[in-house]
Amino acid sequence: MISGGDSMAQADDKGATGTPRDTGTLGKLMAVLDLVTHADAPLRFTDILALASQPRGTLHRQLGHLVEEGLLEIDAEGRYAPGLRLLDFASRSWARNEFRLIAAPHLAALHRETGETVHLGVLRGSSIIYLDKVEGHQPVRMYSQIGNASPCYCTGVGKAALSVLPADKLRELLPSLRFNRFTPSTHVSGETLLTEIGDIVSAGHAYDREEHEAGIRCVAAPIWSDDRSFIGGVSVTGPAYRLSMELLHEWAVPVQVTARKIMDEMRIRLGPRR
Amino acid sequence: MISGGDSMAQADDKGATGTPRDTGTLGKLMAVLDLVTHADAPLRFTDILALASQPRGTLHRQLGHLVEEGLLEIDAEGRYAPGLRLLDFASRSWARNEFRLIAAPHLAALHRETGETVHLGVLRGSSIIYLDKVEGHQPVRMYSQIGNASPCYCTGVGKAALSVLPADKLRELLPSLRFNRFTPSTHVSGETLLTEIGDIVSAGHAYDREEHEAGIRCVAAPIWSDDRSFIGGVSVTGPAYRLSMELLHEWAVPVQVTARKIMDEMRIRLGPRR
DNA sequence: CTGTAAATTCCATTATTTGGAACTTAATTT
DNA sequence: AAATTAAGTTCCAAATAATGGAATTTACAG
Image 1 (cartoon, protein in one colour):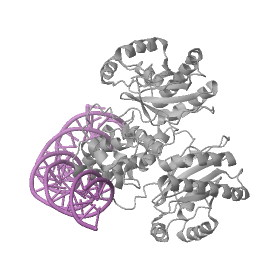
Image 2: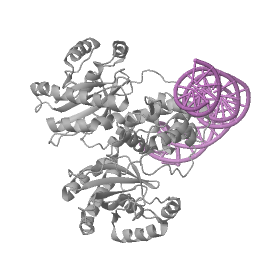
Image 3: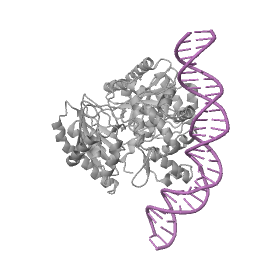
Image 4: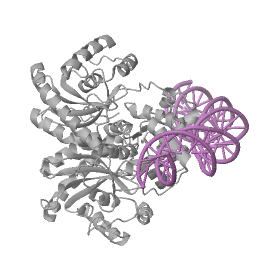
């Protein structure tokens, strides 16, 4: 792979599929698409064959269909890579997302107040999907990770989200987590995580103490709908040398205020039920 | 729809499907996904039923599978909207795109030189898909349109791309274009477009004289692989009041130089064949 | 309540996918 | 350059999933 050394924590939450969905042909095709898009580099047919538990003939036709539809592409060396049609689908998914549209001005305000990168994310299964960010015009920048799925147990937004998850849902989710030690301070067990979640519930905000990426800290607050069918969070993130824990502690207030404003507006625009 | 008034030319190149692909079940599912993602607002079951030429039962199961897979979502009112899994797929497609990775530093340099928004796009069928942009920190900003498919006949990058398309491919493509008069200066016939393409071939760069969006001008240069299997372009875009045609004419040189540098690096990194 | 439209479920028929094997093509070794 | 091996592609009867018309249930309006 060519890959300039510009991206940091990309491609994180690998195929923790969990429930085997009953979606017929589509499910099998999407599993193959996942394999190729989540790989670090273009894959040859045989590579995919080894990863997918499918017979040759079947896989060959599936890949052919995915390529034909533009969901995958074949590079000059005959290897399979993500296709550009995915971008077209996603740009609309993003542009129209109502949560993102409602939150955008509040994120901008929070960024003006702190001068650091602001992230907006939603909880999907055990992953946080980043929906938006407002970047600081500072020399140290994190690479865009909009759309990226990151684990919930080692990100500020993730832990904030877990803190408002109903108890039964949390009990369900915890055992399914596969802890990956990204840094020395990453949670590696449900116990320590659960303890911290207790603290987050009472504080109303969560910290990421370089748990996902060394040298990166953040403070986050949860955002949720009344019936908890929708759960996400907002955070301020930056390099540890600039963001002391004291500073993060101060910022907990504006971050929580921002989350509150977004929730208020959601209630008005999307109705109070959810 | 809620829709803040922030986006300009979004969701352009609507379902100009063209060739009916033979991709079995996947093709039918993707056609439905296209319908929903390309709509301006969430669609109810009956709305989709009217648009898709499918029987009730079939469509119902297809939508169910798409939702189950996270490609679509059902909102509070039971309407279908694009799903967040699309974002996850796309973020990887984008992050790993080699053309984009190679071009990125050159786009940044061109932006420093001009101070205006720089776009990178590739030709896919009769659409330009925007792969990257570097935005000007100016009061008037165009909304992000990375991943958006725009028509080739009324965008700078599109017309630049057409100018390096092999003659036979161009002859094939022209009749399939469905001209949509976005502004008074949009091309509405193949003849006038073909005439301009002739000029672009000799000049080496293309202008967009407010043809896609009123008040927006640009100058673009084509980027192509030796065998023309890959065609795209780079452009500098901005509001007409700031970008006189004279200024754009001056910028044609740095834009073409940028395109040249990107092509040189592609030849080195991806091999000369393509 | 009642009537109407929308959404969902059902199931025999039909079409597509499946998967093992044979085959072709490309790469590597002797 | 021929032989060997690996990679990729095609084939087709059997298995599986998709189809679509109609019946049923649910949501909504008068």
